[in-house]
Image: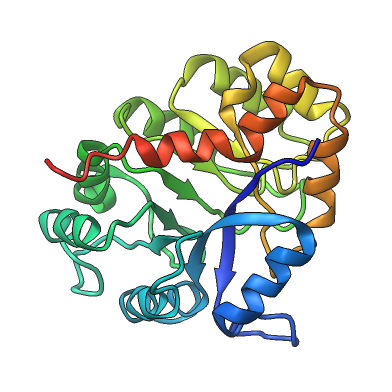
Length: 257
């Protein structure tokens, strides 16, 4: 069967340390998506990640204007320094621009996700049921994630669908109890190359907790695509992971609050 792939995490624009692989324009991105059979994508701005979130988010909206299969994810920050909108302003802007997710880089942007720093931001996203992608910059599976803080966030903000980025093959002993105890926790599969990983999660928790993602253009999309196509799970579960789960999260956003 041919899966309807909806990529949950593609970076658009010139990366700061570009080595010739950036998706500099929407046309370059669409060619890559066509090559790999990816029909839809949730994208965030390279400039927003590497330099200036507000300007990068603005440029992202210009770049994807009129593209019905490209969905915007804004890179977020706590708003105390004026670099990012306060909670109420953010809710209004998210509604006006039909933003589909917020992507946070706490380590890269050097801030904690504690309530004193991010409480207002998470409060706004909790009210909107906005998917929040937590990207801790993991490059290798042996690098730790702040599991205790992830557990705290899921419990403190139960109406936010949290999505962990780059969960690796060494994470099961911590990931599984979190999935069992935190129904609002999800993860994208771009780096989840554990032996029978997709099968184990599907058997224990159902396929609804996983989102297809590639991490392009930083990472090669071949691994997650092959993992999903060749996983020993039902076609129905593959369809959920391929795109239905992400579409469900986006469809659950409360824009009018």
